[in-house]
Image (cartoon, rainbow, N blue to C red):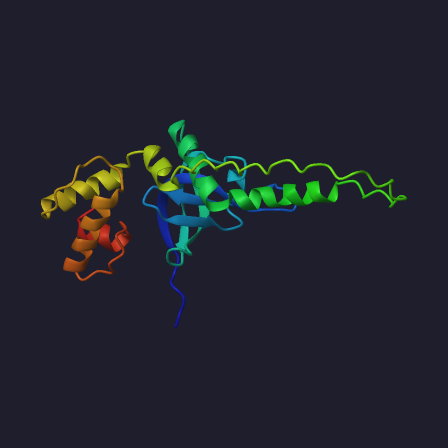
Length: 214
């Protein structure tokens, strides 16, 4: 089966790190679009210029290949946003996709830097056994905040999502056109896709947007 041809697309999203070298330096990034699709930036083009623009909102133009979740983009040009909200949301997304990978090289370096254990010495004279202290109960760990809630709280309304919500309402849905891709919006998208004979994903892909007249 022949591979899918590359298409020229315009993507609006956030620059997030996806790969680090042994020293913890970011060597590859992706664009996390506001419709929840992630595009891995291919080497070449203008992509290398985004390595120092992490957690920044950006609009890129380029050749897109593959299907979600393995889409890639060769960036031909880009435009940075001055919005600070994009940087805040970028921090949350970066934590979801790779914070453990960022810490791994640092942990390895700390392990290698530990001093060698001293040579064994003659055993000290035995002491009278002391009364063992009562064991302390383990401290309860604070529950981690749900990542989904944190992401939703920092989500930024998107004009494309808002337009889709309005089009879905014309088709019979009853959504709040707030520009946020929430649970009710995904349910309405799936219902619309099923009614139009499209692939039911709950995402605003190109075929769905075309069917909505967008």
